[in-house]
Amino acid sequence: MSKLYLVPTPIGNLEDMTLRAIRVLKEVDVVLAEDTRTSGKLLKHFEIDTPMQSHHMHNEHKMAEALVRRLQAGETMALISDAGTPAISDPGFLLTRACVENGIEVECLPGATAFVPALVNSGLPNDRFVFEGFLPVKKGRQTRLTQLAEEKRTMVFYESPHKLLKTLTNFVEYFGEDRQVSVSRELTKFHEENARGTAKEVLAHFESKPIKGEIVIVVVGKSK
Image 1 (cartoon, rainbow, N blue to C red):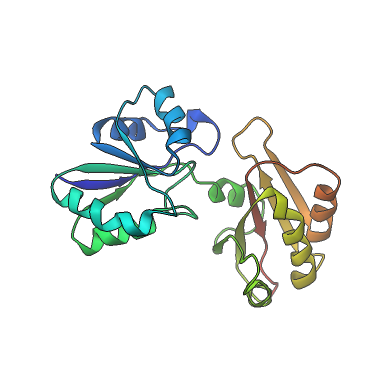
Image 2: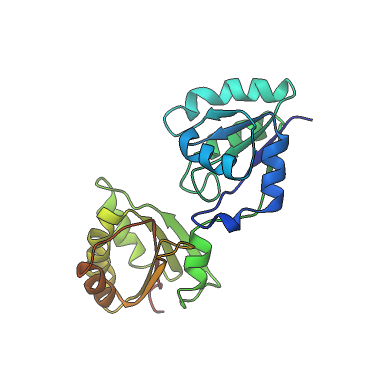
């Protein structure tokens, strides 16, 4: 039967690849990859020779209809991103929605995603939280930060290394310098780092060193 599998891939440590993910990637007809060069290394490591096709943010709109037709014709496909779970700040939502609307079965495997370990190891309340992903770069940024200043749930953000200082500075300005923050960098990798403290303290920590790697920021919500 035709089916679209959403398959998480490791965010750093290859040992986080599940046995089920390896089996599915070997069994499907085609692997839709965000970057075939990056995914090619992963598939080679696990001796997976399934054909790949590029599927990324720049072509996912125009590809969805054609992929749905192929699935309706009986193909099975696996969608992977460069790291983590597809559709979480990565391509995947549009194709998943198109499949659901056309009655094509979709199955998402459990597996790696960066914000879960960052949230859990932050030491901040995680019984209720909101995932914000990347903040707007320019338009709408101030408005969003103003709104989030009143958010009472723990907040989770993704950020790039070259924008981390700007974002932490914004947090000091909009949330207050004493708001508790945790920054996780290079999760599951050799140089993993988790910096915790007030917004002011964490900002000072990263101002004094080069910043590299993928980053997740966890911010405690406003006190009631």
